[in-house]
Length: 400
Ligand SMILES: Cc1ncc(COP(=O)(O)O)c(C=O)c1O
Image (cartoon, rainbow, N blue to C red; front, side, top):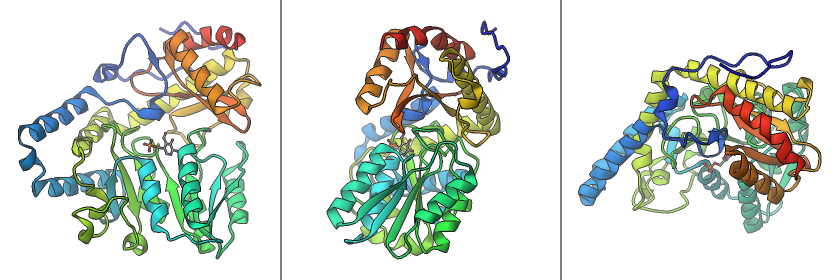
């Protein structure tokens, strides 16, 4: 039973999914309110991976023998079907950042070319674009998109920012990390293509959380992490590429499957641990057995509840709490008092203090020169975790 006074602003939290918390090995002394950063792997999926590791260590030569490529191919087909992606255009990769790097270095950028992004993009992806631009003489241009822009306005801002002929790639997030904002990627891709600009959609958070089939987005390149909301072991992500680009994709590391072309040449990276990929279908199975729609609805409603509770505690009016733009988005942000977490270092320091002193794992973001608290909802979370944080956070912030 929740002890929080819901007053006028907070809708009641969702009913818990019975037994779901027990699927995870998370430290019960900590409120884990940041599933979005590194995910959490259910115990049965950890076990599935351990069985694969046992098999590998029992006879490494046999494990890495010919059938491993077939097992990877089988896994790829399974995960692509779950995501609504073309399996022949889907490569398993280690993480979203790797997928971005593969695409960037396959483009053949030249001096004068530009890569267009928005100011909602993920930091490390920005660094990756910057490095490729430095290497090739291209430039990165960042379009500011107001947090409150409607979908139509977002599409228009991006359309107006395209420089046909010069913009060689548009990189947009399907669900942004810093601002937990859903972008209308299908419409954005349509606009970019109408101007002859290819698009890379950074969908790091989409697998497991969003229902949109990858193929329906129409992006030339799409990267998504299974190890966030898909309950897969860390190190499981996909890069999806449309047919015209597949022959141009070059792996970061050339290995024995080079002659196979995409996706095999990107997947096979020599002697690595492939057990996260092989165990990933167990994560999807876990999600399916809980009920994918039920999990999505639960997580989004709980994140929304947490946003209201923390917003109330920090004196933020409900109208000033950013809406993510979709019914299954399980991440929400709350503005922090002015002057807090305005730099990446300050945000990290505040995050660490909240973790150490309040036993709560949250994300603290810096965006648009101010600090934001990012909260997630997941099946292992309960309303009292947000309420407990809300009761204690104002006093900690007052000391900052
Ligand atoms: C939008 C976005 N893109 C990319 C990434 C990078 O994911 P990874 O660390 O798995 O490469 C993240 C991670 O949180 C993200 O939120």
